[in-house]
Image (cartoon, rainbow, N blue to C red; front, side, top):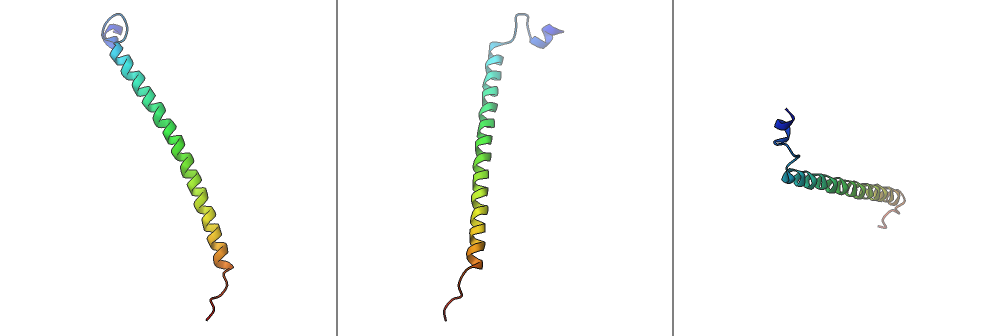
Length: 67
């Protein structure tokens, strides 16, 4: 049964191992990019909410227009 799973006696195919390493590296790269994008999104969200607070304060303290 083990021979059928491995394909032959002697270990795994080097091409299969190389592909597995490549895919593992790709997963790590994507996870790192996800963390970076989440941090960027958090910073943008914080900046946008801060801008909204400033807009509300400015709107409430605005002086009436002179006519």
